[in-house]
Image 1: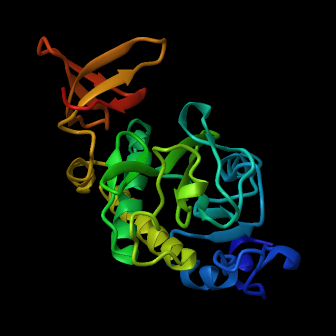
Image 2 (image 1 turned 135 degrees about the vertical axis):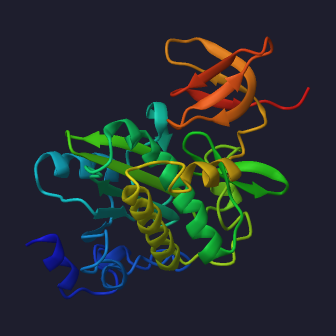
Length: 297
């Protein structure tokens, strides 16, 4: 069955969810896979297939494996109601109760864009998620370079989501998103975590949020591809910089190899790297690393 065929198949509202556990938490209903396909998988859409799994280890790992085996094409979307082995950057564990968030991955193959610009895909996804949430949930969010989504809870900056991009063979990239939606305070894995509900989102219905985020991602991805992945012509660089909570702050960059760099995050360059200006005025573009926002002295 092709991805297009799957979008037409008959399905119950809880497609992908075993009946015994479908309503085990009435405050967290299952995603309506059939309705999501009808809304998102169209002939003129980037999205070519959408599947919902009740539980899996990692949607990124599953979709990467499917792409490498030729079982998935560009535009495939894989969503999980629960992930048992979800990963963030630096192989950190991402855990959350079943149906408490949005956990999904998409397969993108921007073969008309120079590979040197593919590094913008996680940043593009961050902009798309933030834009989609503003439209559907009425919620202001901020982006922490390179891949975190921040919300404000009780006046404090908290991480509510993360993005992980992985190559899938030579022609594709799988981008995964994990987003806490209805996590309660007593369910937070760490004190610095947050959720859309705790941040006062106007909408926490996951079907509505997923439609909004994927439509936003489709718009930004198409806009970026049309101009060959140029971050300035597409408006991506300007939009990311405007919504980036890291710029203008004192940061510590924990670099690969164990070194660190302290300074002010002053800019993003054309390759999406964070430019840190050290105390001596030297400028250092950082392409990979863990960024810590430092409190003002």
